[in-house]
Length: 284
Ligand SMILES: [Zn+2]
Image (cartoon, rainbow, N blue to C red; front, side, top):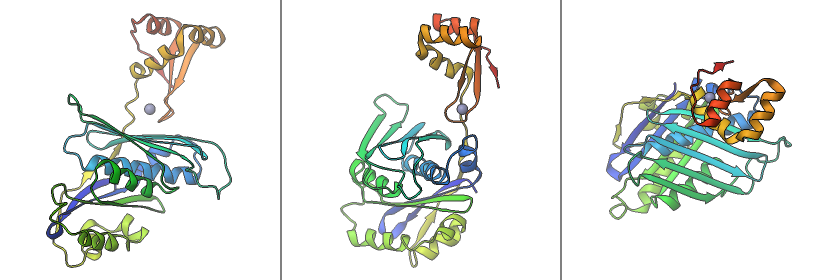
């Protein structure tokens, strides 16, 4: 189960999205030695990025970034067209009881690929819980009442988003939204991660007419290539590249998302620096 599925509570004008991931989560964290808490946060971050993308009609790219003074230094999740995701985290060791998220901020970039279609939202981290930080983001940036729940159970991570449908704001009483949100809040981790939508939604939103859309797959796709990493060689600069070539005979870079290594020999590195790359780098 690696999918995103939208639904509408028709009588009250509320849209919802369900995201459930299993293998995709495993693939995102597989190449790194993350602690259980970081694995969970990454899983929740991937679900959150898919939820952020879900409300937009056309979204080639969504990125979710958390920067914190806590043990988690940086979390970066990207979701591109067709719900293809990748993510990475950098963190410092800390006692288990210290929350990963400290003071910090959340940066959300939405890029529709159209002229003037780039949007950036930045909010302070309002809580040590990712779902509460995201709610603060939605309420501030979209100004539509939003409720968000993230849960993990064993090998699965899942999320549920409820939001007032745009244009429904005035016609709808806040009570309707609060009532639906209260129903959603009763969901258990097992229900949210395991139950099919056809079973889960009527159970949560009793008495509502529910329109359920087709599920779409979410997959892990890093998209790193020797050509893309060549930009990093350029950023290292001529001096650093020269030093690396003298010490190791090549420049080796690792993709920070999937940990794949790319090796550039002297001629390739020089060509990249000169701006005439003809790359056929070896992959290790
Ligand atoms: Zn990669």
